[in-house]
Length: 151
Ligand code: DQA
View (cartoon, rainbow, N blue to C red):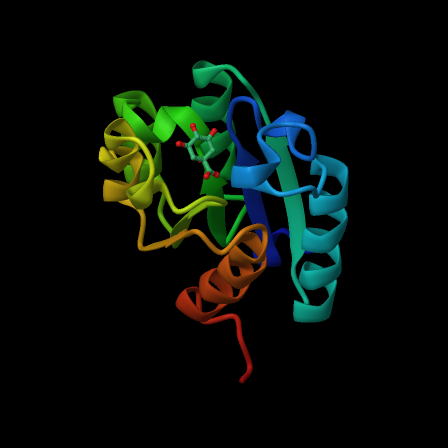
């Protein structure tokens, strides 16, 4: 694996429950199906993926810091932590490369507290409401921003 072309994809709390969890908001795709689609997209794009999911804030912070020096960019869905984690905001701010924050649902049209987008302040791009396609588009965006796309 060529680490200079690796993208770290991080999912936060409760996203391991994709496919069972509130399908009206998050659809029917399971996390393992999501990983498969991300890997297919990555291989078509010529990058590799380091996927990580945790329900624990500190583990997400550690995954972001591990990406420094190993990945060209980060795609992250911090899930509920998006709305209040300064620790994740700080970790993303310290990452030297493009960061794309993804939300499966359109957070701005849901409960008022989901409009507080703390971690997105450290993101170069933000996708919400596109379902899991958001993760696939985010791979292209990271490659473009990192200067890794030939097109
Ligand atoms: C989410 C939106 C968050 O508000 C929520 O807490 C999640 C998932 C999304 O992908 O739409 O867990 O990040």
